[in-house]
View 1 (cartoon, rainbow over the protein chains, first blue to last red):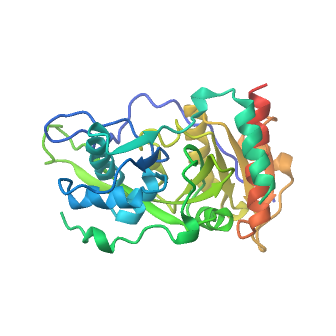
View 2 (spheres, each protein chain N blue to C red; view 1 turned 180 degrees about the vertical axis):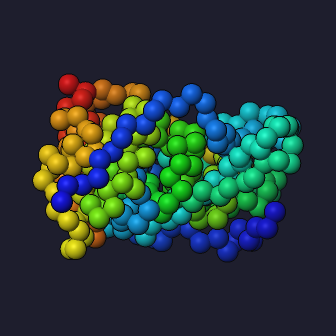
Length: 121
Length: 199
């Protein structure tokens, strides 16, 4: 029995389902460009002035943690976490490091490092 | 906002805490149709119990305006796991049950990924067609992993390549999504493929 055959998709001329991630504060302020795997680490213990959610982030990020993990542990949507982090970054209570993305390729040494690490599993 | 007291938040288990040197991250996305074993694969190779993140997305209704009326909000959930490659470098794996069309609208999810694994089930090959087309459109490099369910029909690799309309260089490998070594080998296949593309 032969498998079913994939037909190439016709080029979409428009996007009938226009979906938007909720970004930007209600006051129109910009949010920090954070990826799901941007690594975040706290620079300080929680201060009395921060919101409870932000205090929780500062506690979680005593060791480095990705934005996705912060979202998971706090049970908050990604966009809510990025809004909270934007404030914490602006006040320098946390620091972040953007992920290494494909646009940065060809970085063969990075891929070799990943292969080396996987082979140790 | 309904938020638990921050003192009660459960963070990573002690053994899951990353070293302070862990500041470089890369990600790989595992895609495929509903029920092909993506979440299983994430769980098989992850060093942490898989976690779930979510995002709220809105769909514009007819007659778009600036308030939320006429729009419907959709919550897109995604499971993910983690592999420490070294003291500095962390690999994150994302995969989720269903709702694939929404992932591609999650800004940066694919753009920022090194590449993708398309997991397929030969009993329902057609559920993977759409996602392959979307990866091609976005120029995301991928490998195909055939999750070998015991009762699934076995097709020669070249028959699958023809059915999926894939160019000869795209790797197609068998795997057992429940097996750690097997899933690791799929990721290695992806890295070798990306490496060959960067030559």
